[in-house]
Image (cartoon, rainbow, N blue to C red):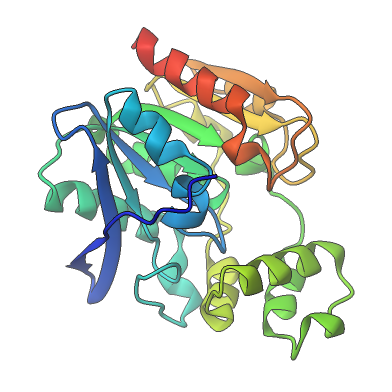
Length: 258
């Protein structure tokens, strides 16, 4: 685990101040990282070693703190967290940095945002890596209203929903704004139609832990797409798959083929 925090910069989009890091080789192919729900660029990408791994492999590594997360502004309206809205934040960051095209990698909620980005702006996406979300992209990932309730409960002791407890504890660990996260989880769950997944032509790698009970099947999602492959991340659940060495090696090999 890498605990050294790189410097963050900010830009303004849709009346929000959004923060990001820009590391690695400035002349390298850019990789845009989009983190998951209740996480941040630090928690999802720096601490598990992704920024270091990609930077050492010669890539320019850009990671955004999604609205409602990390250092970025935190609106309270669920409509502010629609995945296509957050996708436009990511595109605005590419515009801000004058990057015409990037490899885009998202984890969990970030994978959903990445797909909306690829659908709206296919010319901006060199490739896609979707981590922690398989067939749940199109089929849903269960009832998440208890997650919002858990985030707003007076304390963790008041939460008896297992997944709610997991995300409430994670939000407390990351010192997140729980009210903003409750709005986010209510607004960010839009599904993608199977036919729309079939329109994404960018080369795609879909990685899901074999013990992940949230994501759904990566193989089922990959089968909907013309240029996608699935990766089983052995023995990892939703929280632990993101930093797995098998996942990292698969992504580096995937990029090397492009």
